Length: 398
Image (tube, rainbow, N blue to C red):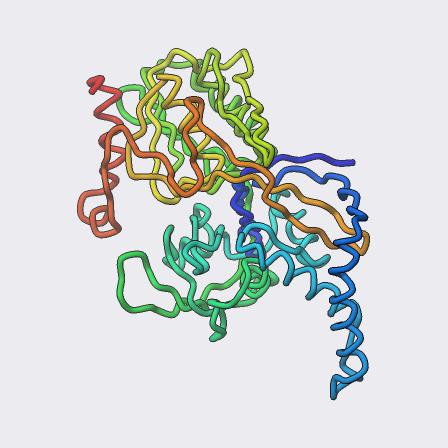
């Protein structure tokens, strides 16, 4: 059975918005693993409770006025969705077969979508981050934006899965989103043409004074390979420092996150996982990192979520380098996927992530060591002041 780890916020990486959870998840979401469906309990109390369900089912079948419209499959899926929705956890969701197919595409070489990851925060569909150079980013969608309507339909009562299903669609089609930008009082309508989303995840450029600026957009299956190739290339020349840019990174595969973090640490713990029974497992640094001694700074903002928060905390709490920027998103829960017999699946929150020092990420996020707030107006007026502050730190050590 195929296993995969991700830290996206159930972020049906609306990169999929097709399609980033995410833990994250990515986008995230964090979902990890196709696991066997747990055996059902056979206690008499559960059987008694299901008598009530079947009583309601029989009433609908016998008395509903439009009996020709009744579809057992639709009713069953609705019952499952309702059960999961009653938990009050936006990341524990039902995934219908069609949506599951889209999810399986989200870390392929490319796919159709608007290129953004979303979650539900404070009961509102919220953008964790747009993907770099995606239709979403080019249309002006930003981290923290709230999606109030999709093609005129109110999202306030939608599940995350419902919202994602309505936003995504084939390449070349358009979707109209009513967006409330973070900090604004009035919403705006943005029409986005869905495009072909490329999944390259590691970008780099050399800045003056032999400082490398490496950006990770998300943690895909190829991120470790891409990062190793970048570091090997950089080591051929003079390298006085690395600025690792995790801004607007919604997460991705957990094992890849750990491998990527390990490129910058000699040893120690990357993170802990705590399950429902309180059992704590540790994810340790993998030996052989290529950049364990070069001066390092990590850039973060409110779009840094799930996997990027795990990497940032690993660097920060192992004393490897400071975080510069803004407080991160705060996505630190793990979802496990259970496949169902009809081709659908459910994603269930099964654990939480803690930093190497035992801090909880979920709902809290990470505070930067050096706070540098930056708005779009700041960027237009003065350029990337967060990046400039990171260069200053690498250059001066403070």
